[in-house]
Length: 338
Image (cartoon, one colour):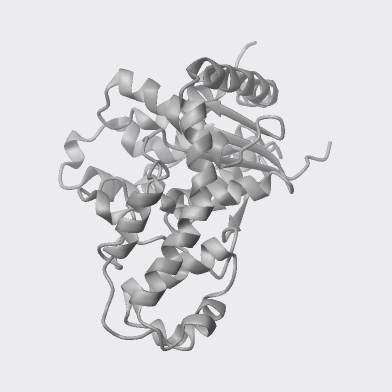
């Protein structure tokens, strides 16, 4: 049986979504609903690899669902659910842990980043969570996975695990998922950087709220943050090449290009020779126009937790209907008595 093009992607229920999340992943998820069978997962199993507060995890899961729906994820066209509702993820992860190799996991750079200097104190879950990511993808026989720079290594691991499983057991059970690289607008920034430091990624972990645009920010807050965003004294150049060595300028122009769905060169054609005194108000206006409808829908959805829970429950049932037969195939293949 031929599988249609099926996308799987997941996002942590961290709360406080920002512009980097939206432009880096979520807007692309929205457009992919027209091209693929899409399965989108709020990965609450991944969330517990680090210390957490249970009540906050539940609240953040609902808030993430609200943000995804507000951004344009349609539960009628895509499957949206939280990971812990589908038992396949945990069960398949254990089986794939027995396929993956320690050497492969030791090469994963994100464990080194997240564990810091206290590797001995990190949870086992944090070490093996790339295998859980592989189970997330392979358990739906996903054919495509949208990836950014920081996830390419994990997709390669998923492909390696799929290949080894298929080879070890002489089956063609798991397709090798292909990366979908690039976002809604490939001319826009591959990464959305901090408004305070153009060399650092925009992040909710930055102690300064002025470093990011939150999807919950109102118009005045957005305008103020853009007004105070770090820049340099030089006017804008005529072409993208002129932004080399100017990380803050490159970031702001890239944001404009991404929000306007045009190239960086097209933005500079309009603003070449002008300073940021002219450019920033235009960027703020564009950003407010783009984000205001999302903010309005988010506030409305967040006030209805019963609806959000129902969406996730329905999505979990649909996801489980796909995952259960795959898990049964895996169990049969490895020799479990059923």
